[in-house]
Image (cartoon, rainbow, N blue to C red):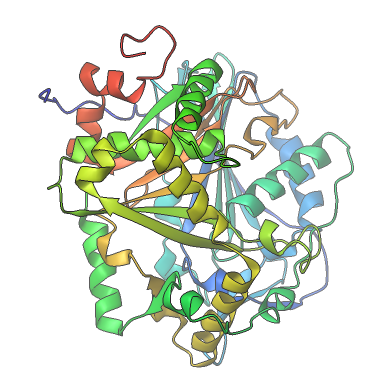
Length: 460
């Protein structure tokens, strides 16, 4: 096994604040939106997304269009408050979103998989601590626009995870983009009660047995959270081209002999990444390796929820094998396990899950619910979040589309799959791993293993 030196995973951009604004929709309504049980799962942490533009964005024009789009997204200009039963609501009081303009003395670099920087330029993440949000005058949306010397801008967007999952966050950004360019966009639905009423306890004992979430005691929840937070992780980004993915999918499909079996490109890619990371971790043959899939539940409840439902609507499911089998199994069989794991998210499972989560919210202990695999997240598992269909490279705010999108490091081992700016069917993959594993993955040996299906690779 190749010996790794610790690489520099991110460059640093010097950025200095010039002006800070509060952007409001100027609406007089103050409805209170009670968050759903799915909304409560992530806690009041913030999700940062960063977009890199070759041309300079107009800050004043962005603030104007942001004020207009906030009329349709009043929660993002509101404030988070605690309900009497321990749940959370957003008071849509138009207290405003925070918009900061900054400048950097450095030029715009050719950011991409091989050159990454902070998830949001500046101190935005430190300014939005999850422990200073509830019942505080803390914005749920913060924007930081950094202008680079010689032209180009970096747009950092930070949204509190309680009000929106990844799909809804990108939907808001897409709506902002269309508003900025004078184009219509569909109105979102903010009625979280529509999701709550779907809860129904399953009569299938297998569904109850395989629930994705479990309630734990306060001390165990705290201990798990602290332990996860102490782990030092880093992210390695890499790009898989369309020809490489096609070769990978053909290899996976060739392993499936049963008539009618099928796997997608993302199934094959997920299986390949899991197998490579399993080999890199080199755990004992009989150790259990877990693969978690973050699943958008809204598409599976599409007949029960209105178009444009906006909020958190995300579940997860898990599959496992032994470390020895993971290293040696055929790619197609692993890909089929991934497909089966996704297909397990049927309506009955999701409605049971909603009922389960609602019961703990009613009891005032939503904060004690966590993933069934939470205690294994740093040693034995890999979580996969697939955003490859999200229009991340369509966010045009008056200066063309971004040439790069930056995803943050996470506190647990995670694979994040995204589209590429070329919209050619390729994938950008962010692998967030323990620092020693991330360093090892950058070495030539493991890069060759990672891209074993690239056309022209010696192993093909």
